[in-house]
Length: 354
Image (cartoon, rainbow, N blue to C red; front, side, top):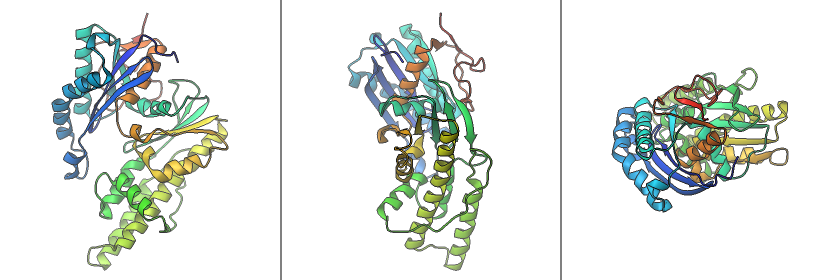
């Protein structure tokens, strides 16, 4: 990657329930502003899409101005504007993309469409440099993927969940055992507070290759919880809640880590990285770091594990280096694939710069 000299990127992120803006100048993060909606969605037990879109509309202008102000950057100093174009909630994505197009058109600067998941992987660059080939693990509420990267922006999905994503499974089990949204965070917090509790053993799913499966485990646990509640007046004891949380965390994470490092071995990877919201999980981070004597390991800083715009800026920096950009026809794509991004003709509005 270039050193980003004479490059000043404003990046926007609005794919789910965070409205975010960041400034990356000469390869260095100058600001990273996040307006989160978690409290507003807690009463629904998850993200309510229409509410998310309305809140993005309310917040997007203010986070842009805050990011510029904190960075000490005037609008006319910007050289590029980057934005998450997908995947994500349709209405939420539209808010960010329209805002980015407005800035790009007004200032007459290039627009860079960014894949949200590429951003999560490039969050690791705030921890260190990439060394290829490497295995990149995406673990979030909507995605569980094991990716082979032979170079920057070269994404080959070699394994993925056949059903639920790991974060989605965490949230559903957490809700069943009475923990608040977001469930993955609640499970992690509870497990850290009770390190003495031992997990009970759960079966390891039999799925081919480097693929993953969480639906069967999740359903089996939920059935067991329902049966136990029925026998105890509809409640679980505090001790059992902790045991379920610990058992789920260990089973879900161990499956991911085992498959990831099998892929690293088979593809002769130099490095393994993790990204996505679940990369904040303490047990996942510790299990990945256990392999640091075998492989170079990168984990993103905690502040960069949730959705943010600084990670979008990092990915955009590489897209610019590769000579790609977007025009004002850039559409949102709620189901955007990572394979081939951004070099495939599938990504409308993205083209090779002259």
